[in-house]
Length: 122
Image (tube, rainbow, N blue to C red; front, top):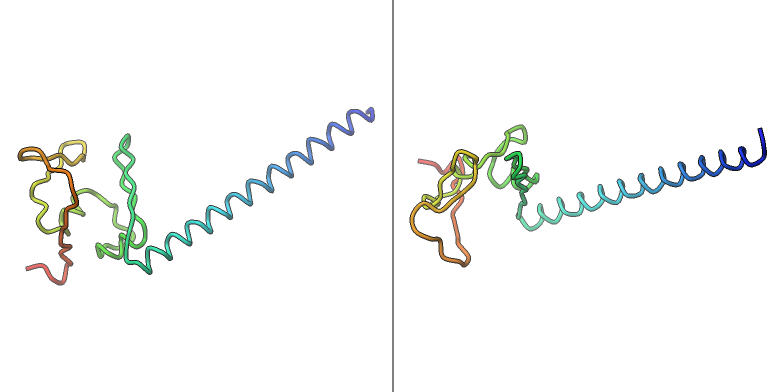
């Protein structure tokens, strides 16, 4: 083997170690950010959710599960939200799980809804 081959091998090894270190640092930073967000949501009693439209999957934060009083093993659905929100009868769920106005056009602006907790239902 030549010195050039040894140098190239060493450079590749250093580059891989550097890339690995960068990846680990990024993953740790993401974990810290997620922990900060979860703590902020817990303190402010606000949750968050995501909706992957292509698959229809809904993802809730830990605080959203707590607010809606669902077990963490529950798969979030539009129906599970509708079960807990009072006065949302102007919305319905179509066959793809999308929400759409049923009667007339919804007017822009903030809307308030009351969460109906399981102990309060009746």
